[in-house]
Amino acid sequence: MKLIGQLFADIQSHHWCAGAERAGRNRTMGCRLPRAAKTSSRFSFSRTFCVCQSNMEKVVIVTGANSGIGLALCDRLLTEDSQLRLCLACRNMQRAEAARANLLASRSSARIDLLHLDVGSVQSVLSAAKEIKTKYSRVDFLYLNAGIMPNPTVDIGAFFKGLFSRNAINMFATAEGLLTQQDRVNSDGLQEVFATNLFGHFLLVRELEPLLCQPGHTSRVVWTSSSNARRSAFSIEDFQHTKGTEPYSSSKYASDLLSLALNRHKNSQGLFSSVTCPGLVMTNLTFGILPSFFWTLIMPIMWMIRIFTNTFTLTPNNGAEALFWLFLQKPEVLDSRAKYHSLTSGLGTKYTEPRQMDIDDEMSEVFYSKLLELEKTTRRKLNERNADNEAYQQYHNNIE
Image (cartoon, rainbow, N blue to C red; front, top):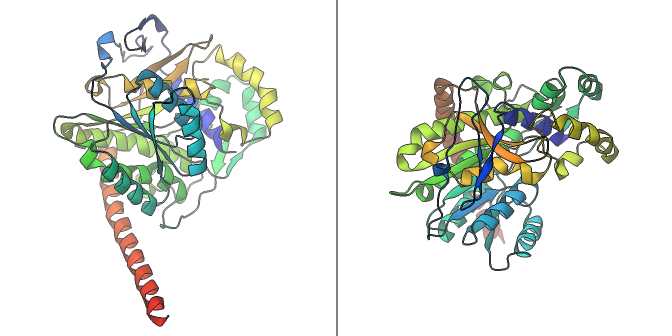
């Protein structure tokens, strides 16, 4: 029942800036340019926002790249820039190999590296970061796309009741009252959802700062967030969400806060952070939430609702729109307080528009400080654990 929440969550992100798109395209860059958002705070984009490809090879790392939105993003990036150096950072290497083969099938000369990375494990993150630093001299784009929503429970009665009510679109947009999850503590002593969706990525950014923050060079961090990222689910005093039942929503709100803080602290060093929402996307995770017959029954309704709301992106390719769009933009002109949403028109045309996030500077700064303290504590515990393991192993070697 994992992705139903994410689906429902990722809808509204696109919904806020529901402005129609411009019919034209920048043919040189292939970048879809959205019109201004239908809000009191308008965002208009000009064609000058698209970044021309330089002759220098770009290095792009994507976490959670073996399927769904991550794989769709990789496909679009390689189509856009054939000189790209792409790294698929995945937990399951067998699936990563399959994803790489899939991408190479239509572009045999593409440079695609594989990296084992479990963002839910501190040791795995540190090991992966070490490998990255030996392989690349810099990183241009770091897409933080991997995430989990474990053991979700869906209130089917509330779902069907809301489905035929005036609140149906909002229900799909937030999943509030529909979905809860059961979290657990991982081997590092951290809440699993927090560790995977937020802290592991934070630690990866910290480890890669030498490659991301280089004089005279601009780098980008792009988060896959959600419209399920609600302030009401997050507590600064319990930012790991140990006491609640919505760890997914809490972790996504945390990523919104962290992105703002990263921009405040790292823009001067050339590192820029952006947040996206893919909308309601049907992936393997989605179909694993409920029996396949359920989705077969509800799909016509979803396509019908799509006529009235632009947040139903449905396909991974559409869901990756905002992540791909950001690849083409100059970071200096982006709004650090906006979440960039993948949207589709009633006829299925995909585009990107921003929506202001419900965040504030003070909370993001406090949260950033708490993460730095947690990083110190976690590193110390890991070093102690590794030292104990080495001592134990040496003791047994001496006995033998």
